[in-house]
Length: 324
Image (cartoon, one colour):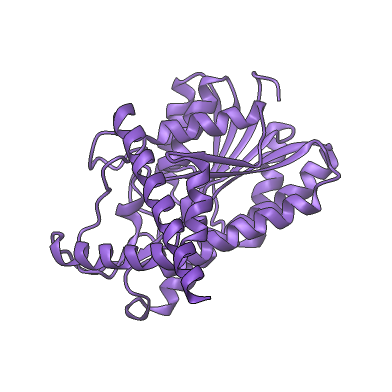
């Protein structure tokens, strides 16, 4: 894509990574249509985009509603005169042991994290096919590879989203100018935990080494010029492959870590977060819990993660050999 005058659509744009990415594209002079459930959050981000040098329109849309997304896509195309890049960034989570979380909350996570992205793709693809080109950037997270006890629905949605994206990429293989790009960041300093449902009784907080949402945003902007199937941010890409190989071990280790965390963390009441209603007001880009990690800390975290995944993978291989 050319550097200037990009026409960009972002769903899940009212806070966090979506907001940071909108602002990053605005600095490039892009024209944007921003969609989310919360109007106040969207207006806040749109104003930041205008101040950064871009043009932004907002449209309130619940991405879990397929008909609403279809209308949103047509309105966005009409407003922009075409769509160069569509960034699907809708996502939510609920934390708690599977049986202790209401099944309706699990279902809502699947709808937001998986079905909404499918709705985006279904509405967007006819436009791309008619244009003969376009880039779909699909926010997944390392949760698409690494199992997450205490977040079973989140894990199901992210594993499913990775499979959906791969299937779609296969279908579009012969359309050389239409790209499906997956993004896999580690923990990112966004309002995500404040928006999450929580049935653990423990206050959610980010671990050391959390990365800045602006770093993810820069990676998405780069995909407009250099599309690629997989972009990993915050850890070595090979670590994700090793983590997938080591799933039986990493799942048990994560479960034990979560058990310990739940007992030691500050206490809080159960909440559905913003699963069913958008957060009130403007949430902004960052969580406000901690400053972004310094570059050295990020490298150390990535190295430790890679080492842990490697050790776990070796352990699995040794266990398999002995069991034979």
